[in-house]
Length: 151
Image (cartoon, rainbow, N blue to C red):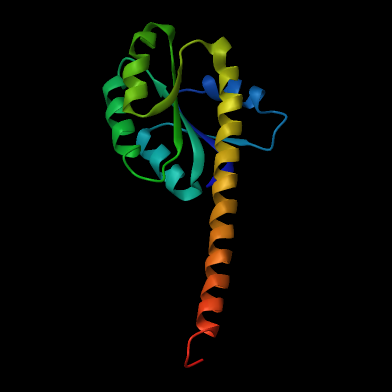
């Protein structure tokens, strides 16, 4: 997983400006996409650990369906949904579809910082544990192999 890039899918740069301000002190880049297809391509290319999706009246159902498909695959990036406050009534439906968080007020964009940190630490620890497991498995295999009667 790419821990240094945040992918955001929105029609016009609004949330990305706020996210860049929020992440200005970190080494995390913000990659803007303008469609779900473009977002999907970017996620496949970079294997980013977090994607932010702008929901609006015209794409609410498409985002909901897209989230359900994306989060059925494993591993998948974490998704946060952002939108205007009139859509906050759909927060729990979007969460049930797979969004980790839903933010409908621009002042609350700071809630993304701890989510990004959790994503990073989770994937860093998964990478470390998979490395440790492969090392243990190889050393166990060598010990077993050396104890076989024909070796």
